[in-house]
Image (cartoon, rainbow, N blue to C red):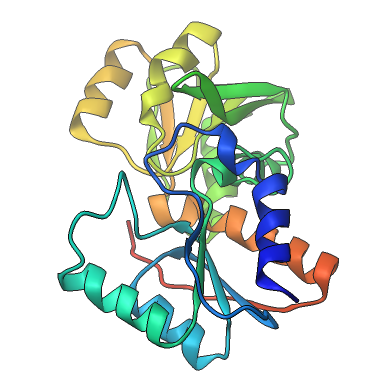
Length: 250
């Protein structure tokens, strides 16, 4: 498949240009023109790049790319990664907020689906656009059960910060660093947020609101989108695809 045709499809399907994002979304590094195999990963690391090259991929699609707010110096790890990409003709395609927010293959719709929920509406407003969703159980569920479902289905450790209702009816999903949505959740009466990471300052905000939170790991909560997009590319274009798992434990 021609690279530019695949990029055009991805740009449109993911609505790449709509999001005010520090990440330079879309094709960050240009490589080979013909695509037969595509690697998918959460992060752009030297190890991820090397594994993609070794497995014969012509394109690497990731959630976290190399360029955030511009690349001023091509030294150190930036040089190593860019050198490996260019020397081997590996295309690097990035979808950060567009992949969080996508209603079909996004990280946050995926988190709700782990609980058997479908999105009821947008959630997690960031610079004027919502990047997450919220859902609702037909019957309220114990907070321990909700945490267990996420832990088992994501194969991750979940930390529960119970500052509100023990029985959960409404769930907001904002993967990765989603604690910016704490006050929005409280205002909207959302019982619990599922996110990836939680700082000391986030804890203080949550306890004072109060707002309950499930923290399931930045990496793990953001595997869902790239995996769903991978299956879409496999089915739609018949390309060889594979996922590179490089968990951080964070």
